[in-house]
Length: 505
Ligand code: ADP
Image (cartoon, rainbow, N blue to C red; front, side, top):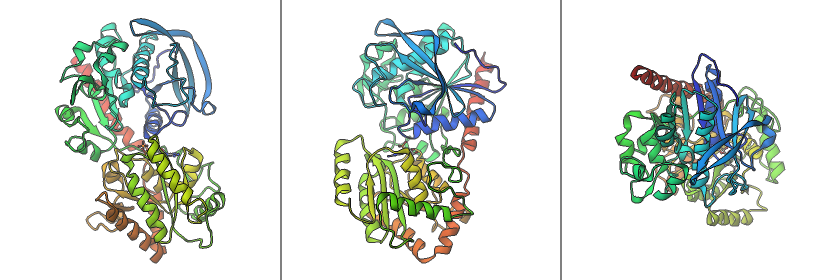
């Protein structure tokens, strides 16, 4: 196996279920890659361990090869072999674990949503630690993400630190507290964790069912550092309304819990170099943006009779969290206001997918609206570039990336004031906020009036004062949304935690 690094910075290993662009479902994938690249630039040695899914984008990897050594890991009372692959993604060294288990855990044609997700990811968490242990790696920080790799925290302290893999502090980032991965307590035994010891109210027992364990709660309890993806969301999840059952646990562990706003991968999301676009552009050449708007109208068969008609985009997973009823409302309201609407979204929820397919059909020949109900990376870039506004009416939003990406592409966000949206979108008309920070339109109430108010103010601005709108576009395209400020906050947390551990030794 590959030897340990000797760089002067920290040695950080991310263990995660997603990594952009090869295995991305949502923001988690973007964060793992964006944060890792920023940490690497700051002089740290970063490695990533992900499952080897069959449905990854293999064409985006460099030098993928299988290692000679096989890693054996425990599951269901016996040892299973894992083939380990190594490759480079965006300059980052990545290890892929392929379990040689008859259930073919990551050979399912999709990342999540399988009946045995708890088994698949608890297996992976253990195999990832086993890889570190068997290869003699001595990371300073093991950073796990979301419930799928939350098992790493109790596994590390209960099984691996006693065996000698004891160099690391554990950092856990929860990207969305809605997904906690709870399961019957007995299922924990498969990966070798002690059900008796862990199914206790102060450890992994779910706060609302005594016979169930909660991996996210386990990671909150067992990690040295716990983060989530924005300061406002960190506050929200500490309340009974926002915590999805974990607020008391988070309050108990509040000393190690912080919210750090995500950044954006500014190499991936840069209109000046974006190869997906018809024409690249920058803030001082907005002709290119207009060209992209023309191109998408042509490609999707939208009317170009009125070139300056405002175009509203929406790029999202269609799940209740994202305010699907408000998205639906915004689409009709945009038409009434004389705009064009482009929705790119797909839903894992069959009735929501069906409902939007119905709307798509209703408007299939309409000149001002198009619904594209699938995941499409290339089209997402082209919509960010073509749209004048992007609507994000989330009910809750841990961080949200699309508002920040939109701004980099000169599309003005219209967002509900919640979570990370509240930390990154500041209303143009809010005089309590210093002018230089105002960058979009926001609304508080998660209802049609709320959304209408913001949408109408944005349309008035766009239609009645084009010059000032242009200035706003300039301003938002110049806002710093890179990973660097966030990575420096993670770095500080890592360093403090490592220093505390060294002092204690
Ligand atoms: P979440 O992680 O809750 O899905 P975020 O706003 O944090 O939401 O991240 C969403 C990411 O996924 C963004 O990069 C966005 O562009 C992308 N995305 C969402 N839906 C689609 C889609 N249908 N096609 C392409 N990209 C999408």
